[in-house]
Image 1 (cartoon, rainbow, N blue to C red):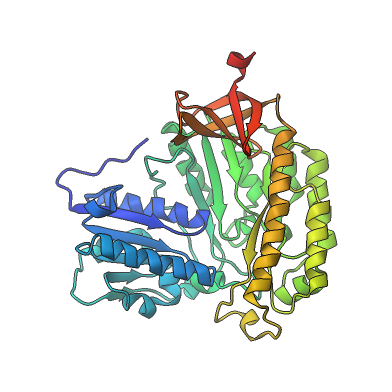
Image 2 (image 1 turned 30 degrees about the horizontal axis):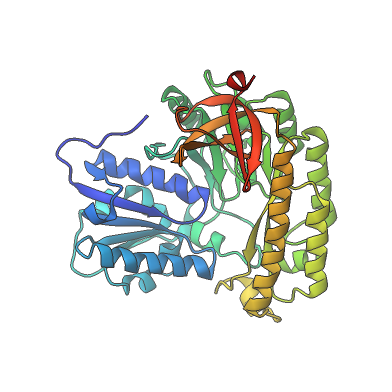
Length: 442
């Protein structure tokens, strides 16, 4: 399950990843390239010969976190040059070259071939980038896994053709494009053969998978083929935009328990006026229909959403509409994001930018709603048995496990990682759910 660096290592590297699951999948691919070229990964920043930063730029805070981490890395290991790649590197490469310690800045389309840039070592920072807006194809890099992970994130789609007014992602990721299904299926087979029990399919706009391939393929059809892979135990989906969600995915979850009953559909706002300003092509009513459709047919499914708080012009009433909607819907959890002005997006020039303190207050309110929903959902299953995958994380004598319907539980640390077990969810203490294997608790 673990890729091994070749003998006669060319140097030790440390990788720091920021942002979404797609970025985490990208990091797995760039690790494969480096290991293949005789570089060895280390989990010690101080021990690294050079440092890789896979950056995010979705918000102003994301940029700030990346810069702060780079400064800290240079302080702790000033002798290790730093290579920055990812979305921030694609958007503002010159800005990153001004940070002390940064030697290379590599754009998104080139991030899985970093080994060739490390060989071009120079005194001054070097920029390597392409016009990602011209990218039209996507191929699956080898899905090498960080030894500390038990759930591979398989990025089968990249880029986005939407024009949401607040989002910089189409600029830094390019147009929507998909990995051909035969490549996806071959990689899935490899991961299953390597012993992984749960695979997470991810993408920037996952629901649009396959629409622009020479022979179009729907996401549901691909998943149906993946589920036929011998030995496949579980497939989980990352976020799917509501305008690309389909009933076929719900039917697959009903008919096949190996598709995790977990759906994440970003809402962003419960106000139709704000959704229109955001250029989101649906209404709050239509979104509600989708959530109720899923809940009625898969009542035990986890239902998550994203909410963007403080979009320019958002009034108290707009926020109240969002609050009422998320409270009313059978959602399991919310990911709440304060609005962040991204130059190059339509929202930058819109009137009515809100005070950061007002945005923070609204975000806190929605996060409190999220926590209540998360706790109530988990409590529904106390005393019941759910299938769960055991993860690598251990703490204070317990291991973390994740149920099929996305409830995080604690199990005894002696249980092995990367196993799918039937667990009986027991008591709840300080917000944590504790569980035991069903046969031991019987």
